[in-house]
Picture 1 (cartoon, one colour):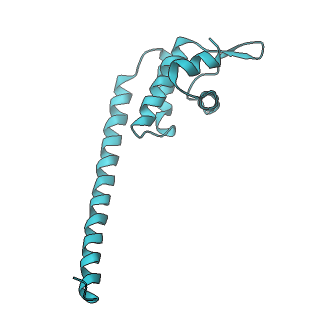
Picture 2: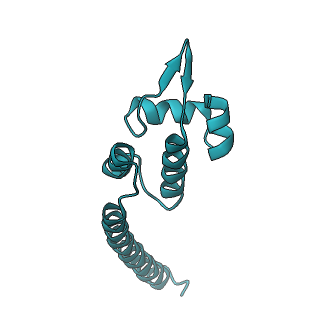
Picture 3: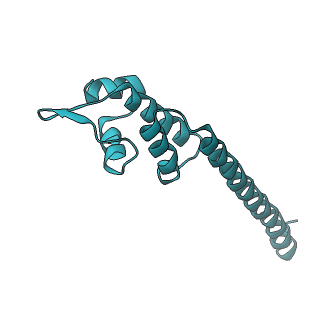
Length: 119
C-alpha cells in the first residue's frame, strides 16, 4: 500500500510516517519506482506508536519496542509491560512533584497575605 493509504488507516500524517521511518521506528519500506510500499506490519507499528504517544510515551522510548516488533513480527509484550511500568513510575514522580509545588503555593499565598494584611 502507498503512504496515503497507510496514513488513512492509522490516522498518522504522511510527514509523521516519513519521520518514523527516518528515525528507525518503522523499517524502510520497499519501493516501486519513487513510491514507498508499506505492509500491514507498518500499519500495526504506526498504530502502536500513535497509541503509545497518546498516553505519554516519547518516540525515543519506543525504539526497542518497535524494533523488536519489526524484526520478529510478533508483539513484544514483555518489553511493553516494562515500558508501561517505567512510565507509571515517572508519572507518580511527576504527580508528587506537582503536589509538592501546589502545597508550596498554598503556603506562599498564606505567607504573603499575612504579611500584607489581606489574610
